[in-house]
Image (cartoon, rainbow, N blue to C red; front, top):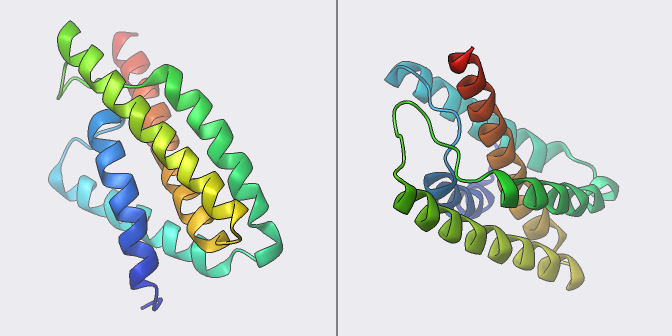
Amino acid sequence: LFGRLPELLLFLAAFIPLRECSGGYHAKTPLRCYILSCCTVIAFLCLITFVPGNRIPYGLFLALVSSFVLYFIVPVETENKPLSDTEVIHYKRKARLMIGAELGLTIAFYLVSWYVFSLILSLSLTFELIIALAGLGRKKDEKS
């Protein structure tokens, strides 16, 4: 539909492993999960297709902010996937390594003027931040 399969594959290659170890919001039903996953993909494709070239440097700022916040809040548990103390340590270490690697690649791509690749990785980090914050919000609501 968008003609952006390579960009989508890079996004998914960065986003899915980070999502698996960072945690965050989980839909309560498979249908909601499917719909939210489709919305995520469509939102990414719209952004990568329609963001003007002169706005791409803002992606680097998003990556820096997202990485900083994610570094301190991951992993985000849910009631569907509670974590033991050992798992928290394991996932925190793994997520922080991935966040650092993705941020490093984002900056490297930007410095060599591969702006689209930089933006893709920036969006991966930003989307994970949104999902992690939504997971924290849901967890807070459940405790209230």
